[in-house]
Image (cartoon, rainbow, N blue to C red; front, top):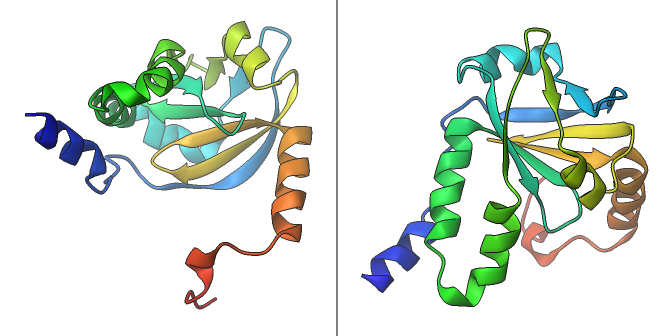
Length: 159
């Protein structure tokens, strides 16, 4: 039984939604609401605009369409006890939200604080979900990554 649970989270991931891609420079309003870019709204409305936001270990937030979140949540919940703290980080901090009629999503103050987000943000399409970064933090980390050597996984990759 444990072996089948371990195999479950090792399976390749297949997103149920469109593949989200691209970066959008945005600003949260005074209430902490994010206006979802128009190019992503139709795909998100297929799931009735229901989203889940949680922490990412790299210091940003992950924004999932609810159907994508449910698959991710199952994979995290199936992890063995050695991953209990990571279960707490991902599952214990998850917030279910809904887009309003104008395409805005409220980002909870606790999550904004955890990611160092105040106003200016970058929303990155990452396939089946988004990453939401504080704009200055993202720019700094991207610059550091661009200055570093490419990971070995790219050695045989053709551009």
